[in-house]
Length: 591
Ligand SMILES: [Zn+2]
Image (cartoon, rainbow, N blue to C red; front, side):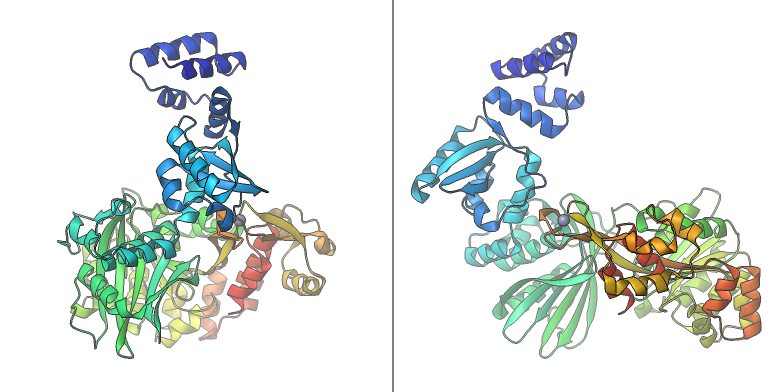
């Protein structure tokens, strides 16, 4: 057993973190060839940061926790990325001519040599701190910017394969299209590397889409993250067609076809995760634009609570899906998270005793035990033709990706009437509009009234970053508006949902929240998204109103029947809960 390890165990015993017996046991395990780090981790002696703090004590070093720290790029770049990567060191602060350097391995003399050398040339004095691997990785990510990686790929030209591509390879088992491109090819040309880097950064940044578009002078790469498009990179225009070509090869599209739109798919393993990319190529002004939708099939299906469903909305869904027939609709524009909500509802319904079949475009989640099918309109396999076939497959529950046309609408209603529980989506702005939309599709009011069971509408708002959230007073000019918006919700419900709520007179003493921006959220103040929701429980009274009134259903009708909360009201409540900001709610609702 190494001297330093003995010291560490001594310290633990002294500080009552482990007993003497436990220490002896650990020594025995190490002597038998065990790795002390693994053993301590296995026994969960201390959390990882505390452990690093103790290792620093043993090594006679200072310790620093950088997990929540912000570091300016200027400071970070005092040590070049290659050096940081090779030696696991990072510069995190400068005070006058002293630079503070965090290192992961306290006994790495090569690292110290490298820093000393750098310090001499920059005329600064280094001070060393032990940091955790997590601290290091946190900032190393910041370093490894998309721009740098791509420009180094552009510089490399012929040098070829590079280590940081090893995490990415093409998937072998592929029921879609297997791509017979070897790793070598993947790594060979700089364009191939650029495409890989663009894809990897998109996946790491949890983007949902990648846009690669030709502008006048350059090629622009944008990522959609948490619903917002952001330019991530501009590339020289001269490589645009090579990038398009590369992606077409991966997606098995026709390279020489540049006049008509093409769609394809790529399946890749990125950071050990199997990810599908739905590729769409569109001819534009003598060039082509590519949009890649990222479908992470391995990601778990969130629960309705995870998605932001709470209180009444959750209760209505849980009650209504117990019914064995009828139609549940999720409405909202593209990108409002409808398919995720459907997947969450399906996983609630997913039991051994029922046969669930789906028709989707595209399949976004793998749901175990559910018969999922991808429609292919090009070969005549549409929602409506698929639905006809599915009904012959003895289903209990049907999920239809979207009701877009009269035929699909009629088939869904018919299935819902004849002992199937059907869930689907509809492209309308709110719950109320779903009824006239379906009637416009020539569905009979009495059939619709009898079948409809639940109507949901939702939007996605960005969640405030938990690391930099701050309370703010409700601005004066908002107050009147907020009071008006919440007027028709009972105090009882507001009290149940907002912890600090007492009564409506007290609204001015409540708070909103903002994210100040930090390293964790890339300075945006937001991290992840949550749904704001409205829901109509289609009770017998409402069914009757749909049938009677022929065409219209009004908020008032629903209000008379149930405690209806609109999406905007739900958003304001969530802003008061600190889940999102009021600006975000208004941005999403009023657009
Ligand atoms: Zn933050």
